[in-house]
Image (tube, rainbow, N blue to C red; front, side, top):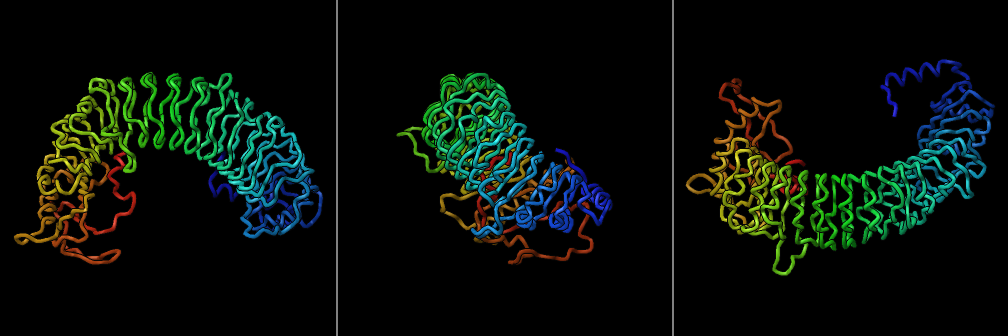
Length: 571
C-alpha cells in the first residue's frame, strides 16, 4: 500500500488539472465531477486517460454513459464510489462495455447482476466490488489470467463463485458476508498461489470441496459460516497456513489430516456448538500459539497429549463440557493465558466441579500471566495448584465455593488483578500480595476489610459488588456518620499518599478509585448536583504543598461492560 499526505495529493491533482484545463479528455487522470461529465458526454476518442475515479453520486451517470468507455482504449484504473440504491427499479440499463485493458476495477454498490457480457477481463489484476448486487461475476465463463485480487465482500445476492480454474494466479480471495453464497466452485481447493482466503459470515454456505491442496495459503477464515458442517481433508503440503478460523460454524469434527497443518499458530473454534472432539493429532501442530474452543458446549475432552503443544501461549476453553483437564496440561511451559471459566447457564456435572491436575503438575506453568477459573464450582482444597504460578498477573476466581483462601493468594508475588466476586461462602478477604492493583469482591467484606487495604501501596481500584441483592445502605447514618463516610475516609486517607507518590514516579497521573453498589452520594462530598456536569469556583490559594488531588463521587447506573469485574486487567 502506498500512502501520501493530503496536501501532496491536492498539489499533484492541481498540477494535473492545470494542463489543458479546458480539455479534460487530454488528462491522464480525471476525478473532478465536471471533468468526468465533460469527458463522458463529449463522445470523443482519447488515448490519454489512464485512470478515472468517479465520486459518490455520479455512479448512475456512468451507467448511462457506459458506451463512452469504447473511446478509452488506454484506461487502466477505474474506481467508482457508488452508493446504495434503496429501490428495486434500476435507474439505467445495464452497462454494455468496459475497456479490455483495465488492470484495476473498484466499483462499490454496483447495481447489476453480472459484469457486461462483452467485457474481456484478461488484463485485470484486481477486482474489488463490495456491497454489490452481483448474483455471479459473469454469466458465461471468462479467463482472468492475470487476476491476483478478488474482493466481492458484502455482495448479498451472490450465489456462486466463478470457476477458479480460469483464475490461476489468484493470491487474495475475499468473500466476506456474501450471505446468499451457496456454491463454491470445487476448483478453489487447488489454487496453488492463494495466500489469503476470507469467507467469513457466508451464512448460507453448506459445503466446501471434499479436499484442498493450497500450498501458499497463510490465512483461511470461515468464521460465521453457520451452516458449514465439515472442513475439507488436507492434501499435500500446506505448512505455510498459520491461521485457521472456524468460529461460529456447525463443524462437528475435524479430520485427522489437520495434523498436516504443521505451521498453524492460531486455531479458532470458538462457539462451534456441534464440535464433540478434537483429534489427538492436533498435538502435531507444534507451532500452535493460540487455541480457542470457548463456547463449544458439546466438547467434553481435551486430547490427553495436549501438553505436546509446547509453543502454546493462549488457551481459551470457557463454557465447554470439559470438566477434567489432562495431566499433560502442566507441560505447557510457554502458556501465558488460560481461560476455563463457566457461564451462569452452564450445567455442572452431577455433584462435581472442574478437576484441576495435581498441584505439582502446574509446576511448569511458570510463564502463566492470566488465569480465569470463574464459575468452575471450586472449593478450598482445589486451589493448591495456584501456588506454583509465580508469574501470574491476573486471577479470576469469581462464582466459586471458597470458604477461605488462606495465604495462597499472597504467595502470588506478581499478581495485579484479583476477582473474588460472588464467592458467597468466603468468610473474609484473603491476604493479598504487595503487587495488587485491582480488587473486585463482594460488599459484605467491605467494612471488615477496608482498613486492611492500606497495606497494599499499589492498590488503585477497589470494586465492591452485590450480586445477592441483600444490599445494606452505606449512607444510613450511625453515630453522626454513614458507613460509606467511614469507608471513604479510611481508604482514601490511608491510600492517597501512596497514589500521590506513584504519580510523582510515573509518566501518567495515577487515580485511586473505589466502587460501591449504592445509589446515593455520601455527605462527605460538599458540592453535589444532579446534572451532566458541575462547575465550582476554587479558592484563590487552593493549591499548596499539602494538596493531594481531587475527590469525585458519581452515582450512576452501570451499563454492560462498565467496570466489568470479569474483564481482566488487560482489557
